Length: 113
Length: 111
Image 1 (cartoon, helix red, strand yellow):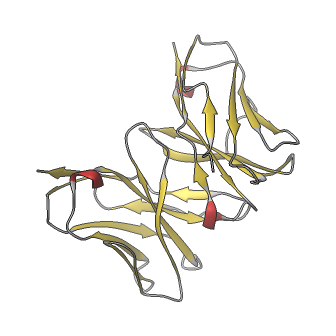
Image 2: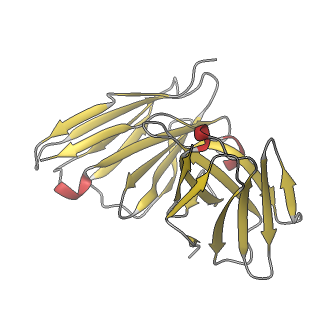
């Protein structure tokens, strides 16, 4: 079974631009969670989607948004990029959204200049 | 809110030695704990978990110990190998697919 895939793997953007990251979960998984990983703050929860509905959201500004499609693929969008948004963005998929079975993708490395 | 902390940001051990990575948590109501391993260029990978009704759980070369009295858990890796070099995180799951992660301990294994 193929693992969680994320595209692109690397991205360089300029401050003020917007960016869209994509996550394809493991086949059959209906929950996708997104995390931001930085050296200073570590791994922080962004949001979780299940069957196209956002069920949970972390403490991030409204510039961070996401969505999930009927095939469970998910995208997250960051508008008006700031230098501090430079991070590794990870998505994790699971069948039900429970913590017992979250599988992480390799992440998208976003650099904002 | 829930918080998770690690005692050491880095740990260096000799190949073949045992490694111990520690983690502390704040909420005594937490009932489930997970250890993840993150290798360079990869996402976190599940290693082992433990429920609060257990004090100890063993996997292949890994053991997790839970001390609920002092809200502390540890990951022990037996006969550490170069392939064990990675960052190790403890994590506590909350509702709705949310995991609270510790800051991570970077384990380096010297050959």
